[in-house]
View: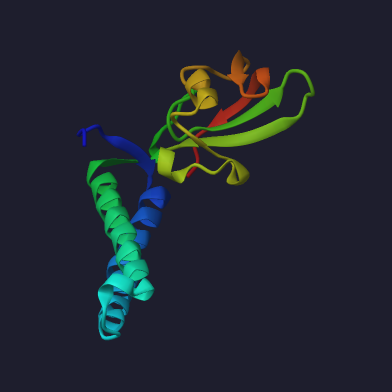
Length: 160
């Protein structure tokens, strides 16, 4: 994998770290036990429990490797230490849809932290990329799967 740094907030880092600890301390030992139990049932070539457990082990080990890599490459951004009027990683932005005047709040976060439902927008999303560098009062236009959307930046702040 490339050595590119992955920006993320402290809470996002903590969530990934918790998931990694859970996989290593609970999921991995459980699947190893399941494999051991399935082996005791004899012929492995026709043992569905064994094959299912081995597949689960493969998924767990892959996720452990992925999380370890991401945590190793992560760059924790202290959002509380950022200030200014320009939109950067970690900014919480209040946007108004220029067609409907509907207001939405998003925080720009790392890819693994994003959740549109929770108002966390991935730094790599088209909307976040369009917002970076803009300021309060600016308008942006973003091409979405549903067509082009125009937004006005109502407010920008940095709170964690």
